[in-house]
Image (cartoon, rainbow, N blue to C red; front, side, top):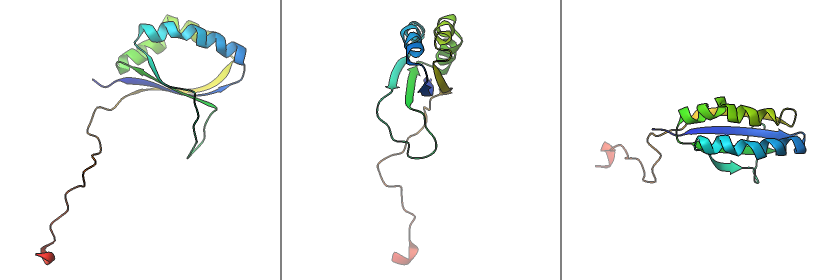
Length: 114
């Protein structure tokens, strides 16, 4: 089963208010198996727009990611940051399909070289 992810881009506008949110959101993430893969850190916007802070949270499944978003615990934490940040957030299902390989793809036969 594919995992679920929250991908957030954040501009903190009021650090004190945002700290209240950060202090409160951990209970919801723990309840639904959320785990930070990215939490701030240096980055370079190589294409398109960006915000000052980036966050990626992994959940056991897309259903868990959505359940966390909709939970009373998370909504209470979210209410504590109102006015403290501008946030773009998506909840997305991960990908479990084939991945690129390091081996070269088969080359078509060239009848002229035979």
